[in-house]
Length: 315
Image (cartoon, rainbow, N blue to C red):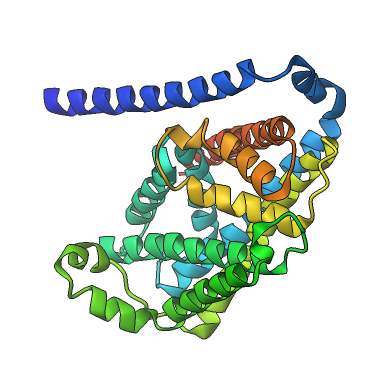
């Protein structure tokens, strides 16, 4: 009992420490900003923009909800669709209070386990499918974004860099369509055996792969649209493709658990990418990112907690 309490205390201390680091990083940036830049939020950003951006953040969850249900059902999870929807949205709350969004996965695992006769391996397989396909889809979006961008300040316009992106895309296609063969080889390597034993691609085929990638793209496009509208309020004129590139790269960076939920990392990362790749004013890009990710965090907390309590009340 004492060991479990001590473990819980240590986890809380780590979370508080990571939150403090993130807030400190944000504070350092904001403290060094010109006062006039901070006033731009008051002068330029309207409530209608915040509401429109928030609406697109919420809409972006619908394709990923369908993706979660699609993966679960195709992999024989014996849970009603309405229950899967409750688990998905309630998981947002636990994502918002845990590092690397692992809390949502843990909640979905326990909820499905409690409500079905599926094995641990069945449920973990679905969660891993979500993670793996989500990451591959994100890499596709960023890769093709670089190739399709017409922005002249983007370094990728050089021929050698375009070739590199083509090669990355080909590698991703190879991984996607030959995943069963790759998995069968990797699972024989001792360090991968335990982890990879939880995943299988029995239900996966080309139709399965394409459906998940399309749903992932729709969800991410709606998320990028929410950023696009806030940038417009700051008179930052970026093509939608360029917004996809920046937001996609930030999501990849967020996989690195330096701070809690990427606080203090995602905002400057967004600003650095926007300024270095597209020549956008760093302070304006930073403030745009700050607003967007604050909206995202609040929506995750309120939407997630609402579905969590509804689900508990229902049961």
